[in-house]
Length: 395
Image 1 (cartoon, rainbow, N blue to C red):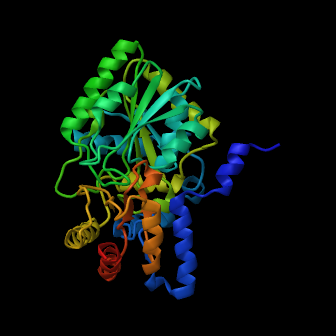
Image 2: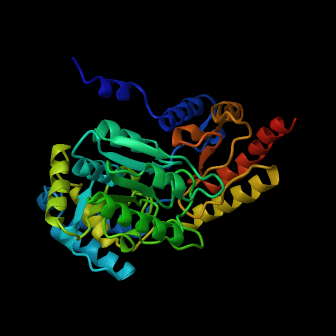
Image 3: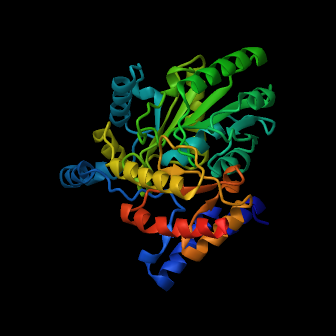
């Protein structure tokens, strides 16, 4: 007998991946330039030149045995210190290397953290729709806990606090937030974060056990004319899960970290993170890219490309009659589909080789996700096709 859950997951790709693979198939038929694939969040902006320079320098000057060898399970101390120093400089904090655990990207950060926190099948983790679909897999199949979904507040995609307060209970072990958001691009306001922190403090006291806030932050640096609150400063039981996949365009290199809060029982929390990493088979984060990110703290890719793409889409959609909550960060937008059935809308869009992801997969029916981390020329060529699609519905 095999693990049936694993078999099922292995046989069914996520909708995002299914559409991405469909795009690859269509590209082979009609040419890549004729496919307008807005399905996957794969950064098209190259990593900064400094990243390439640092890699060359490391490869040419470092002892290969050390460069490519094992590090401590939680990451080499000097690399963790460089990240802690950067966070302190940027956010006025007082972190040290012993609070950091380097990971194989944000997915590993989340799965390790969830497994570290889960102690019973009755444990619950709250997520806010629209949410990244893999959260449910990480919580339920990965950690063996229960996912509790708060429906979206569609007018602005901030938190529906009335429903949240109704759903939080003595079994709540943690809450996951993602700001800037995948899929909406929305940034939680200072007011939202402060109110969330107050509720979590009150409920932790009421239930006489800590409720942790897992802040999934791979898009922290990708924002447009707004400031992203540094959540850990508002709520001291915040576990930050970060990845350099988006900010440095290193998605395929799988490198990130967990920042563990220095609160009571810190030693046990950090040990649980280390132990969960061990249970899941993470020996250590890639040693070469540990060194790369330590030397690239504070850098980002050229984010102006995403800003231009966002501007083109928002202005175009407004003229065409698409309705969309303005995204203040990341490189996604989440407009309403032009019919209630978002899956049917996405199927109709395929007629124009516009590849969109239905909002139902993110817990928000009647919307579609558009990932605009593509070439600006692709956006310009796609806009007339979005217009033709809208015209079908106007008729």
